[in-house]
Length: 292
Length: 217
Image (cartoon, rainbow over all chains, first blue to last red; front, side, top):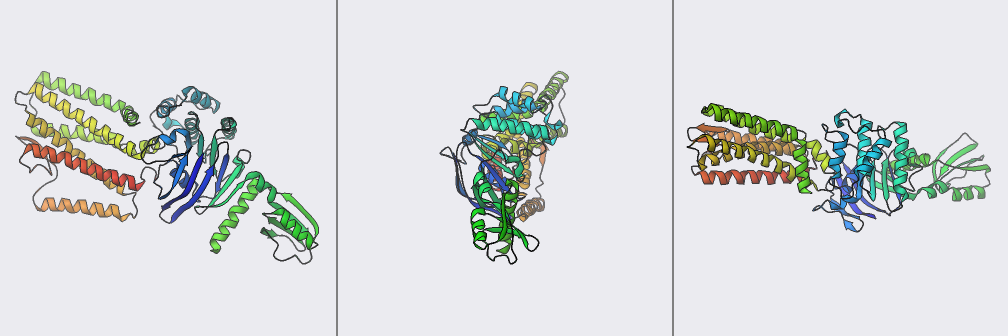
């Protein structure tokens, strides 16, 4: 559905890419990265709101072009900032946005606003940050988008609204012909939603993996050893009070097998939460970059 | 999509458009019924005020509008075009109203007067675009490009002062002219140069806009 090839963009000292990314219909992809990792820049390039310096973006075999914005008909976008016509009501803002989409449903928009407890009769300038985000969410999801591009979309949402929003997202993805790109640095938000995670650090993709594979392979391993073996494979971090050791491995099976061969005692392993894995991946990529 | 963008621009400025129309009507009716000839300096002040009001209203909130609109299924150049189309269309309406006023109230009103009003409006828009370019340049890297531009514009001003050509509106019994075209004797050439200057500056602003990514910075 979405193909990004060799995408590059530079802003002063920051450089994004080259990025290669492909997303199939039905895929819910979580884009994870620290602040300034390049998530927003990637999305802005995707939306054509900034000029890419190199590379191509193709959506449903149609290249994102500088000469027409029609390809954006299929994208629902919530940016890091939600601009609206401040003197207009939420309702009028939606009606205006809707006229640009051929498959816009004002009825759907109103229903969604009700579910999110958003008063559409109020002027946009009277909305709180959370309510502006809700309006952006409604605008992004009311035109039958095939690709949702959401940049920190739950910023400012209260817990109830966040819950309803996740419910709406699940419903939207149920059809299976829609793909999701969800950028966040709070991995817990998408733990139940994403089936694939892409980690971005310093403008580069440092890891692209299926969520279940990550959960299967990453392990916390504890053992007892008077002299701990050297060069344990796949170890990401290591701590413990001698003679007890605790390590985090990105390939738990191989690491366990290696430790067994070295006859360590009390060998135990457990799964890590996706959030913990994400933190470890981002920390190790940051360490590698600093090392370089 | 361009039509929809223009329609959105009109809707965004609907209230001020209505006030503008009402005030124009009041002015029109007052001048027609009272039948007073306005001294040139009052006419100049009023015309300048109208034009500046139109431009100021059109530009206010423009950045936010652009930031919203570029997220829709349009391209930034369409958003840019629609914004300027709206300003130019509104200005041309104002010129048309002045022309109608002139035709209905003065037997001496000629095509030459219409030409002068047009060049006057072009002159005001020229200033506006020069300022818009300066603002858009502020988002280009490196930042000193904006300061170079300001320096260049001030140098132009210095040259104009040095050679006794003052920026602004020149009003006399022949009508109103606007520098830099006021020195041209031929009115036809003056109109042509006014349009060319506006077109050139708009093209420049467009290039700066496209290269600056300013709609999101």
